[in-house]
Length: 180
Image (cartoon, rainbow, N blue to C red; front, side, top):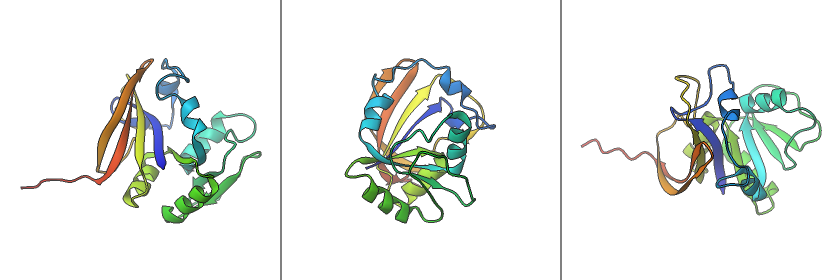
């Protein structure tokens, strides 16, 4: 199962127009509470992210690569690899990356770390199973959108964790629009 697990502002942005996540780290939450990262990561066997997310991790995480599982970075540029991790760089169609991630995950689930456009590419390929999103009580007015695609989702569950309202949605497909 491929899950886009992320946080967003109330107005639907992952980061501000300067790729800052300062708004996120000011929020109260319990890592072991509902929709917490600890429980989520226990079931993850491989991850994928876009190049902007990768560069943010490099700029904000000291030391070796923070993930001890196979990690893919989708990019059209040549990027340096961080030491200490199983990093793989890919470009183009997300389908072969999904197949490689599934094989590398050892029966565990897959995490799409970010960003929104990459999540949209997996959704358009029919590979995104769910979106788990924690909404913070903040608005930015502009920035990187949560998921710039038109999709139908089905609410599976929701809970409050600190300042966040967190929800799990099943991706049911492209938005069905009645134009009658």
